[in-house]
Each structure stands twice: as structure tokens, then as C-alpha cells.
View 1: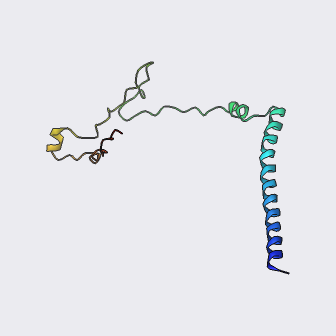
View 2: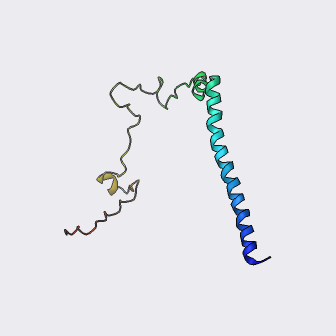
View 3: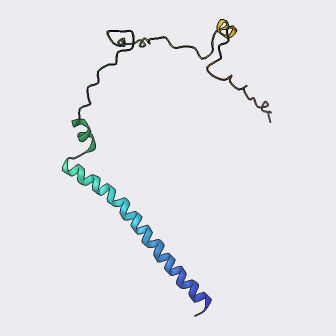
Length: 118
């Protein structure tokens, strides 16, 4: 058996293997829509299953120091927060007293040279 005959047999074997893999991939790709269409024909869809479940009722958590629970949101407005959010950088008086910023200073902006016109 010569070298060219062996390489020809090897190429044919690899081609058959590649073809079998391609057929398996195409068959798998065709099977998935088939399963979905069978579910549609039977009337089973994921949205119907999801809509049948009711969410659990969650009672609102009462923050410390309040008896009646969190404030209700008003239409068109923002929900009040308790306590008010703190700024990321302390004011000048707090810095003098030794307070550190919550975030490191932002890096300087990087600028590119201007674009030359042609």
C-alpha cells in the first residue's frame, strides 16, 4: 500500500466522520422546532404554565424607628427614602474633621490630539 493510497483512505474516513457529525447537528436542529410545534398543537406553552402560578404574598418590611412601614410611592414622583442618601464626597467641614471620601478620586480625562484635516 503506497502513501497516496493511505492518505486517500484517511481523507475518505475523515470526510465520512465530518458528514456524520453534520447530519447529527442538522437533525438536532430540526428536532427542536418539531418538539415546539408539537407542544403548540397540544396547547401547552410556557406562558400558560407561568401564568397559572401565583406569586407569594410578601408583607412589607418595617424599617427601624417606624411603626407603619415604608412610604408609599406617589404617581409621577419619586419614592421618598429613609434616611436620605449620603453624598459620595464629604463636605468641606467634614473633610477638615478628618472624614475620608467614600470613592477614590476619578482619573484625569484622557484626550487625544486633534484630528488633522486632509
